[in-house]
Each structure stands twice: as C-alpha cells, then as structure tokens.
Amino acid sequence: MVKRERVVRMSVEQPLWRALTGYRVLTAVYAIFLFVFDRDKFERPWVAIVFLAFLAVWTAATLPRVANAASCTKRFLGADLTVAVVGILLTPLADEQAQQVDGPTLPTIWAAGSVLAFAIKGGWRWAALASTFVAAANLVERAHPSRDTFHNVLLVWIASIAIGYIVEVARASERILARALEIEAATRERERLARDIHDSVLQVLAMVQRRGTALGGEAAELGRMAGEQEVALRTLVSSGLVPTARGGAAGAYPGGAAGPGPGDAREPCDLRSLLAPYTGSKVTFAEPGAPVLLAPAAARELAAAVGAALDNVGRHAGADARAWILVEDDPDEVIVTVRDDGPGIPEGRLAQAEGEGRLGVALSIRGRLRDLGGTAELISVPGQGTEVELRVPRGKAER
View 1: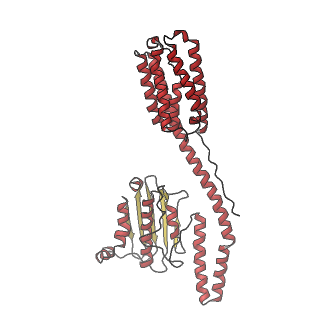
View 2: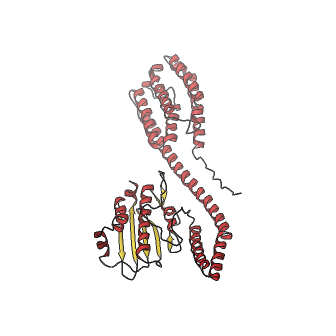
View 3: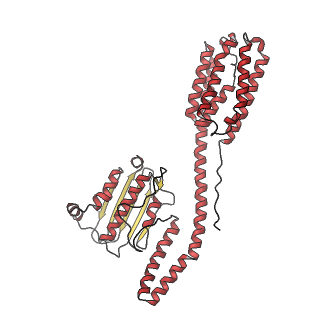
C-alpha cells in the first residue's frame, strides 16, 4: 500500500479571531459598567439603556460570526460597523454634555472591535476604510473636537492599519510555509518512487539491453531501445518531474507546434514539467532546483517553441545529433536555450527557407516569442552546431 504524505496546514489568523471574540465580550461589559457608574450624568439615560441592551444582545448573538474568517461575511461587517457608528452618534442625545467634555461614547472602545474585524478579514485596506468611518463619527459627535479626540482617532486609525498589514504578511507566510511543506512531502514521495523504480524497472531495462546486445539481430535493436528508455527514465527520476505521454519512437526528438499543455488551470504553471517530456537519450535537460512559474498560456507557448526547435534538430542536424535544453529563471525573465551539436546552418539558409514558404523558425519559434513580448535569437556556426535562445519577460508573459 502506498503511504500518503499528509501536509498539515496551520492557521496563523485563528488566534486573532479568538482574541477578537474575547475583546468584544469584555468591551461590551465595560461599556455597560461605565454607564452604570455614571448614569447620573446622562440627561436621557433611557437612550443609553436601549442602545447598551441592544449592544449586549448583538455582541452575544454575533459571537459565532467572529469565530473565523468564513463566518465573518462582508454583510456582517457592514452591520457591525453600523452599530458602532450609530452608538457613537447617539451619545450626544443621551448625554448633552458629551459634545463639550471629552468623555467616552456609548460603545466606548467596543467600536474598535468592529474596525479590528475589518483588519483581520480584509487586511490594511479594509481596516483603513472602517477606521475612517469610525473617525468621522467621533469628530461629528464631538462638534468641537479637542486634541485628545484627534489623538484617539489617529491612534485607532494607525493601529488598525498596522494590524491589517500584519495579518496580510502572516497569510503570505502561511501560504509559503504550506507550499514548502507540500514540496517536502512530494520530495520524500519522489525519492521513494525513485528507489522503487531503480530496484525494478531500471534493472529490467538494463538486463534487456545486455541480453539483447549479446543475442544480436533483432534482439540487439530491442536492447538498444531498452537502453535509450533506461537513460530517459533515469533523467526524469533524477529531476523529479512527471513526464506526460508523447508519441514517437524511443530516442526521437519530440516536437511539433502543439507541444505539451498544462490544461486550462489559471494557477501559474511550472515550465519544467512541460519541458521534461522532451528529455531522452539524445536530449539532455538542465533546469533549476525550484519551480519556474509562468502563466499557463505563456508556459505552453514557450514549451511549444522549444518543441519546434528540437523538431528542427531532428530534421536537419542528423540522426546522431544531440541536443541540450537549459532553463534559467531570472527575476525579470525566463531564458530557455536549446543547443545541438549538429553541422550548423549555412549562412542565408533561414532566409531562403522563409522565401520557400517553410516558416518553422519564423512562425513556430520567433512568432510565438514575439506574441509573448519576448525574443528568439538563433546563433549557428557551420560545423559547430546551432543555439536557439528564447527570452520571455515575466511582466509581458503574465499579461
């Protein structure tokens, strides 16, 4: 039975939701006790009683809403912020002296909980929007804001934005950690499969090659093919890339304009997985140790251009020519080089072929790179082989 690796995902923001739940309960109790001790200062205490009763019920009823990000919807956030703003604006109605004295509002610091919910849910931009509404309500409620009022408003605004930014950084770190754990699990599974393949398939192919060579005749051809498949399989196992099915006999140069494709996924595609199927006994693939991510359409077009270049090697460089694929992943661009040890291209041959209607290089290679905003440079010296350098800028490829 195959042992499956299980990647445990951690939630760095779940403790923040639990802290917010406790904060809302404690600050609601604080607002009620503050009114009880200062109720003699209110000209219309019934206004404060009605609002604080509603605040207590609202806080208790919405505790499940602030338990996690999925439950905390945009509609709830809007309603919760409305409760905080209304409570602030009702303060002068309950206490006429509130506009002249820097006293607490009816919801007091409970209002900051609404802003924190925005910050945890949507990051610093949402926090800035919510804190702006709360700040405007406080300034309107004071009528003649003092320095302390501006200080408190600015403190809430800056603190909420800072918390929202920290949440965004934590989420990005969580995604990176989860990806690293997935890669580690996949690496262990790949190593296990490599051991199994080495102990079974590769040994069988090596034995077929030796026996076929010894028997001669048709068995020798079978042994040669087994040897080529052994080399190709060793290369794929060592690189850790999963090959896709392709036609053609063993040792042939895979090519064609269609090329392999990653499907219609919108997630970035690892270019290495598209180029790995081109590996064989005559094609060597050198790639970075980390994924080379490109937009799916750009990755498909670039892989198809590589396939067209290899197809030209198979057609024009001779049956014994070897080819090398080198992938370089720079911050600003991806560079793929296809080189062969064939006889090279005579000067003027490409222009002649284009004039005769054979547009393999012009369309299949340069045309594809031009559509991606990149370049295709072909360098060939008679007797020294041909090198095709494909450059794709990341910004243009993503668009």
